[in-house]
Structure formats: C-alpha cells, structure tokens
Image (tube, rainbow, N blue to C red; front, side, top):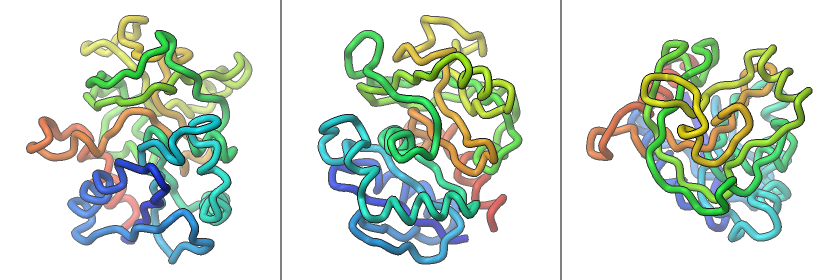
Length: 229
C-alpha cells in the first residue's frame, strides 16, 4: 500500500499522521506539497489537521483552492480513498467533497481535549478495524468544528449510513454534554455516499501509540492498510 499526505502552509499534524501511517504500513507515506499539480499513484490520500493558510477567510477556504486540490478532487471522484482530519475535514467541505459546513464552536472557544466517539458503522474502509457501536477515545483540537447542514441533508446522511462517528458519553449515549462544539446530531465525522471519503474533526493519529496515552486510533490506520493492501 502507498499513501500520500498533503502538506499545506500551516499544517501541523502532517508529521503525526505520517508516523501513524508508517507504523501501519511499514514504510513512510509520501509528503506532497500543496503547490504540486500531480500526485503519484497511491491507494490513500490524507488531508491532515492544522491551520492551513492561518485559517484566514474561513478554515480550509484558501487551501481548497491550492493547485494540488484539483488532483485530490479528481482522485476522489475516481474512487481513491481520501481521509480528512480536522482542518482536512474543513478543506474537504470547502472543496465540495462532502456536504454541509463547519461553523464556529457553539461556545465560541477553541476546544482541546479528549472526547468519546461512537463508531456508527464498520462497513467502510476507514472503520473496518472497529465494531459498529464501539466507543473510542480521540482528542479534538479546533475552534470551528460545529458541523451544520440543513435537515434534508442531515436526514439523507442518516438514511444512507454516511455518519461515521458521533460524540457520545463513555457509555455510548448521545447527549448535549458529550458534544464539544454544538455539531448537529452530535456528528463528529461523515462519509461521502460511496464511503470512500471520510472527514472527521477528532484526531485518531494522536492516540495511535501507547507513548501517546492510548491506541484507539491505531485500528483506523491498521484497518485501512489491511483493506487497501
């Protein structure tokens, strides 16, 4: 398996996800700078977290127009799996790869803490390492992670099984207290209709090794490698 991590000015989690992928793949992924217009043939593309272009305008808005994103969108359209984490999710939204919008957190503060997520489906390349209904712990670190979409879009996401993760209590129950940013229906991550594109606000790469304090994120990368190798 080969993977590429897209690096934008202001990315600060590219190294983290490269390490997590390398541990799962047994070799480092490619780092592709945002000014590139081509991406070598790979099995997975990752848009990492950070503050691309300083989060000016809207988070991800400038990065979505980087030269490399034309190729990312084209690869996604051809079925190449694409994972967007935090700022990567914001870039996906701005590039039209996923529906909805990511607004300022409801409390208008940056939130940085561990949260509990419920895996809504194991029927995807990204979640094959988990069981449906499993509760995992991932960190979040964002100021604009409040997922919003109109009711018709939210209902469509529900009906098509496109909700990947929800913010929950440790026992798996959905509550307002478990929601760190005010996201509609406690949504923490969504797929495209084909489940080949996943955008999520929490950071699985930040809890993928015992030295980091947990390994709940490791199964995502291991599962991807097993599914794509």
